[in-house]
Length: 223
Image 1: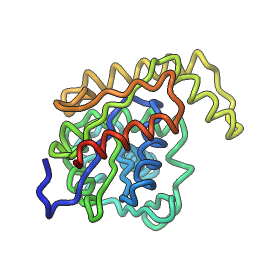
Image 2 (image 1 turned 135 degrees about the vertical axis):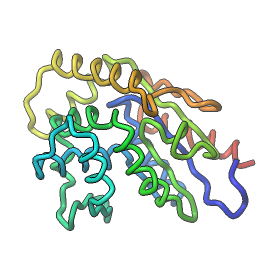
Image 3 (image 1 turned 135 degrees about the horizontal axis):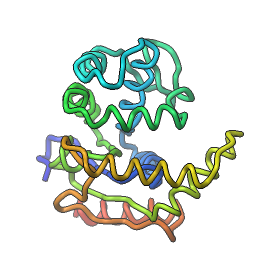
């Protein structure tokens, strides 16, 4: 548990396309907390490495790049070296690239301090793969938000179609299955249900229902 002088953290982990980003940002908004999308940081490394021609096999170079890149978040936008890359990092290509480089311990270590720097008053809602298990193990509330791979593929399909991006459902399904295996089997900070985390299965829940459940849990944990 956190001390009275330490800002509270709600750590929300879960697999790709589980809806944790949307839910986490809404929870943060409801509480007036800061919000950390840790996945965006890995996507930023993915984009920066592609822009600079750094090979995905070069772990040391990727680690150095992650430590030195200039990142900022403002008004819901993501900036890399002063450039708005909010849309560029959300492509499926960047998602796959980020998942591949996220297995490297050097990259994860380089981003650890940056992620922890988001912990500021009045509190923080952080979502990712290892928020509860590694980055904020003392979080006041730990949530593992998940859904069936079919439900997640359908959600991602609707998101991409809404953006005018043509994609095949079977390809999305295969990609999510491969990412799940990669995230859960990696040697450094694998995706798992952290000790003390509450599991929230959202296949049959609306976004509003998921947000309410987490807010209720947080209220109970704060009493």
